[in-house]
Length: 230
Image (cartoon, rainbow, N blue to C red; front, side):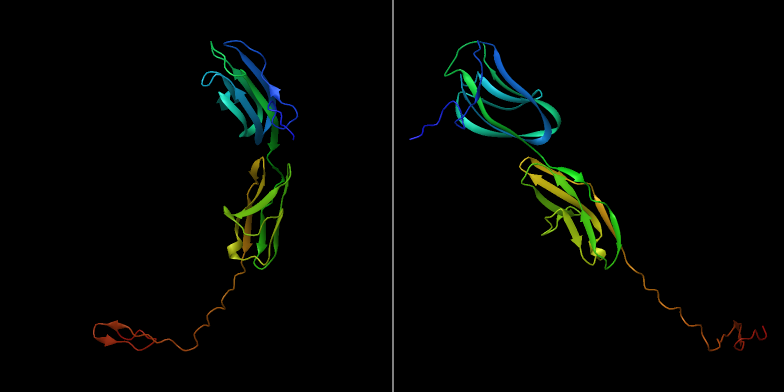
């Protein structure tokens, strides 16, 4: 029978807060560059409602636990840019309870994908084939999805998108969305313009029969083509 180590989640090693007194805190910190998704396991044994284990991204509290809380996993979105991550165990001014400590294990930051090559706008005549190409990198597995005018294109899940024999309905704005466990990113807009040949009608034939006019003045009528007597 194998017994798990209650001081770690994965049975290997875990970080534990240091010994501190009342009104003190123990801090574990690092820096991380986003965008991405931070996952970790933590637990705490403390005076419920007064002594806390917290996660702060820069100076903003993202999560906290207190009391007798067993191992649980947390997931936090890390925005773009470089940020300071701090796990802080804090005690109030009096009373200790339980093991009076917090623990942290299996900290993983998964970066969101990056669009390395953006798709380019194109123009084509109606009936031609068009291919949009893009490239995205990031931790695997990666998923891809093309959208047209904000709507998902069914079956368009590769880095390249080929549109055979384009027509008026294919004109619009295309983007590639790349996704992994760290998040998702959308490419810049690529516009497709479709030129439609115009069929000009032949000119109308000139009239061959003579035109006939009558002028009216008072009671008299003039003959066709002449002014007559007025």
